[in-house]
Image 1 (cartoon, rainbow over the protein chains, first blue to last red):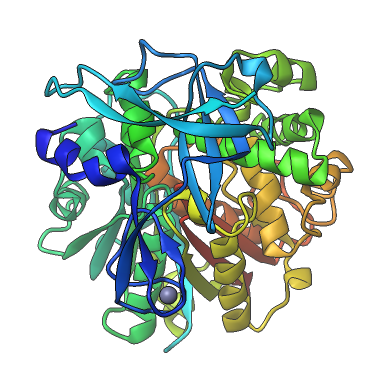
Image 2: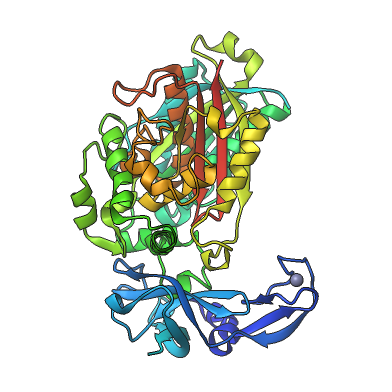
Length: 130
Length: 386
Ligand SMILES: [Zn+2]
């Protein structure tokens, strides 16, 4: 993780900043230059919600370089409403507790540390809502 | 556009080939294909490769290819579309000959994956996913397909046994393929009880890390007979489509839309329906992938890929034989080589030269489906014997 790359992603990772298409209302996370639904190019700033439901999940037991010390860890695709799904880790959960349909909220957490450049990256992780 | 035929195929045994470099692998398969066609040069070369940079620190395969095949100054072009690089290179070569720009075009697919350790290979493969919104969070390719598997199992009641049966079937076929990396049987219990990689997928649900290459030579169909005495095998259809790079942004998390569209385009070009296809080689990078691919191709009803596999529909002697070569699962998956090796296998089957026990009966029309990432790109070709 290079420093510029880490910095570039902060609006989305720290503040969940998204864009809403002025023409068709589709919410894009992350923002894009053109709406894939209607090809509109004008957007208003918005945020994605910080609660949602797990649509699918897995437990990563063989991790890529940069994550080997965290394994095993849970990853899910979470529907946060407004037609937006995001992929993120699920923290504070035992693998056997994970389920499709499980309600979660997004929290600000450390995602990666000590990559080749020494950058510590923060962002959102889902945690279960009981 | 003019008709195109395959007049040469070349492939060596795949596996962990530490003593050979990426240049050796390219040259070996290129020479085998030249020998098969009875040629010593071609007009142009395409090289499908996903990530020679991350796996071997070597780029510029557009020079390495022709140079080590001994055919400089023939132009070489590298084609990259993650694990669909080979299929995309085949399509480039096909369009090149079809357009009339050149007559004889060689397509090589290659990947040299075992020069790096497992974590680095996992990282290199993960670059086929979205770096900022998938890989950033620590997801891997087995992880993405595992999430597709859980979604499919939840939506259609696909079972753990049905996933495992894909591996059992493909290993049974690969056992008879002398070029396959793993020529051995596995049982349902072995697959299910193997080391868990990413729930619910075990190591035996995953295609392996492999070194390997494959090559084919294409020419205008009306010149094929004057070059080679072997049965003329035409490339009748070619289709290619993309999808969002992020799995999370697809409308359906366990449906391969890009494969459906690529297949429709290829079938339309070939003037065929899926029911006309005698056999297929598909991208079983994970057991769940083969199930989703046969559904997207329209060979079975969506959601019925699991039961169809269990019932033997996709076995060598089934109604729609899939991966008689052993597939990526048993034959190996040197990512950039896979799409080219699928074409090598279709030609072998149509020529009737596949090994006993895995030769499909009446194999005249074959389909190859090669996929990049979690299905973000897909290439389909249809080959037909004359
Ligand atoms: Zn729009």
